[in-house]
Length: 529
Image (tube, rainbow, N blue to C red; front, top):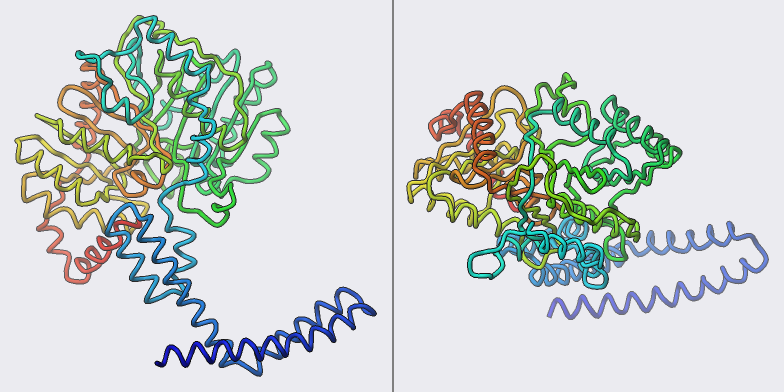
């Protein structure tokens, strides 16, 4: 009954207000005919202000009803589109109880599907372009593809939409100096084109060094394309971008806000780090472009990270990922080299390029890493700076430990995100109960994303073990099925464990009530971290 009375009141007030506004509008229209535009705007502003001031209660009532309606309608959308039930419940509660704050927050952060990119893929996917398809045909003709025993495609190939290839080589690059030295040398070897894509590019000494190498190649007639994420690189100066364009470098932001419905959406990020030279060499891993990634920033201190240099047919797959992102950002499909070749040194390692994104029909990264955990028989070691897994990952890790698998988690002791650092403590007891060990890296900030499974294969890429990487970011993971390379990665992680300390539930309990409460609160916010 109260709701009906309120609705009638709102309607009546709206009619009265409309009449008042119509009368005044006629006056304004008359004045506008003989006055300036500024006078007309001022007159309209006066009407609105006078009405609000004299009908404050009515305006507040109308605004309250509209906000509540917006909260209800948005909560319906959240129920229909949320990828997890936990996320749907969290949004619905917030939208109903606090619509003033939650409605704008949802339309900025709440979406989990990048619809514009999905539409573009369906209309004209760059990966389905004839040149790329011809490259895949050449790979098959030259025996560069790994064929399963019974002729059916591998599950991970169906996830990646790219093939498992042989004839590759991979070089393990540990930390910033080795990585950037390798990348800059590779750029200097370029003869046709250079493709550069990073989540973060800083206008500092390292960023300027990258720029100088690219400018030098442009002067030699080499085409250079640079793509960056506008959120991750929000601190990139306009001068840096102008200098790139002035030198003839093709540069663009990935622009996740492109499209009618993405204008205010900042929830999606392109977190990939890619460099490709002439379609023959590629670099993928955890490092962005900045002095801190080379341990040259005093505030950040020592930065522990891992990258890879690739050669062989898998480079063409990495190039295809860059092309699709470039196509989204610019609408262009530049001409690249699409004739795959095996690694020139004769090494033949099996490799897979696995792109994952919020535009995927399935949760690609989630399924891939769940499969890795479920297939482990002797060992699974996970290194991630942001370890905030959901319940299905905790269950999978517990089952692996119960099978006798050596499960180890490596996270930084010094974190750059306090909420994530708190959340990581919330899993200690659940993991410890079944014998899973959590190590905290103490030498500096650990930023690499590495997984070792048995003696069979390892992964190095850009995806963290958290909701954002699995569901909201554009990521790229390289998987290598090669025992020799796996031994190198294993030895690298053993050195990292030697620079770490074991975290235990006893340590957590010793930290006191308020810290433990903060940990539990942080865990509740895990789906939105």
